[in-house]
Amino acid sequence: MTSAPIVVVTGANRGIGFEISRQLASRGAQVVLTARKPGAGKTAVKKLAAQNLTVLFQPLNVTSRKSIAALREFLKRTFGRINVLINNAGIIANGDAPGLEVDMETLGRDRSGPRSAEPSSSLRTSSRYRAHRFRNPP
Ligand SMILES: NC(=O)c1ccc[n+]([C@@H]2O[C@H](COP(=O)([O-])OP(=O)(O)OC[C@H]3O[C@@H](n4cnc5c(N)ncnc54)[C@H](OP(=O)(O)O)[C@@H]3O)[C@@H](O)[C@H]2O)c1
Image (tube, rainbow, N blue to C red; front, side, top):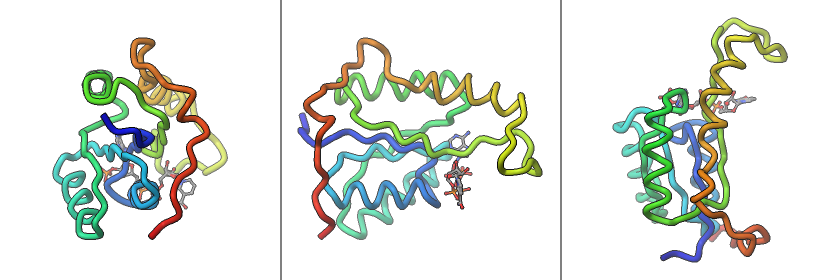
């Protein structure tokens, strides 16, 4: 069982989520890189492996309760905890909406998705990891 902090990143196959995964993996975190498209997630993992960074891939569509439940089971079985959830995957119902306004449809999606991604009460988080300091990048 790893003593590294377990960091789950959603929407991590590209963009900001990928870069967050890269930087935290380089600082010693056990990153669980998630993506809704398995092919894209595995490609991202290979890109990081080419930089000598080992991350785990798990599929996750943040709008799917079934997908969230499957990830929760994986995390529970594999680590029994998570330390950080970086819910980066963007959800917006209307792509033309102004950046500072969120419509009710988007809020509804947000409620059914990311909040359900919180670990179940049986998936323990440990306070001893809360003050973890990440290594400086190599
Ligand atoms: N870039 C900016 O300037 C900026 C500014 C403010 C806030 N943000 C926020 O920061 C976050 C990341 O931005 P970004 O520029 O990196 O975005 P991006 O390049 O568009 O990447 C979005 C990521 O989210 C994934 N995603 C979308 N819907 C998903 C779903 N239902 N389930 C799982 N993954 C899903 C995408 O997967 P696919 O590859 O499958 O589409 C992709 O990996 C977003 O929440 C965005 O709103 C960004």
